[in-house]
Length: 225
Image (tube, rainbow, N blue to C red):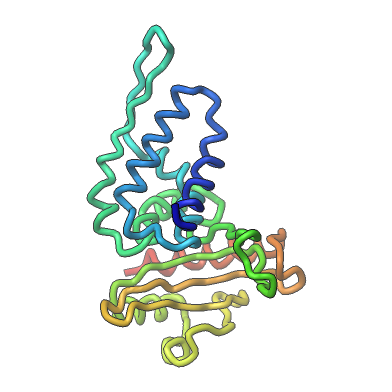
């Protein structure tokens, strides 16, 4: 078993620990395995896998399901196949997750685009200075979409293309911007990172407020046609 598969299984087993009922534990295990099967081509990077498990409870809450009373207790049936087409058409995990995140952001005061990112310390090189932070990932399917994302968020596209990553401000909040792009398809991800400058290695109330502020701004600009 490769390191990526071991990482998937580790996060899956951690997730399943919250299910005390053996019936629900096995049902959730089947749900996750089926969903990961649809997303197999996208779950090949540790950040993408972490992002998937971060929002897995939200995904599960949106899956149509039924429960049936049996002599052994309640049996749950989840229609994971309803997500097959959207999973197979997604260009990245963030592309698959965005509809769920956007729907939640309409009814929640917590950041809809940003999520808490915690680096896996066991997998970080000893010299790595990366710490916990708020992160938002936007998938794009070509240069035109990337330009539109930059235009809406106020990010300098020319500087992004030249430097790949840099510090800037969105709605007067300090943000670190980076992007990745496939050389041939031109598809990729635009990433926004928010860090408390006074406590750069941990999530704080200040960084949470910063993320909420930028998130509220993004909800407004992305709602505009």
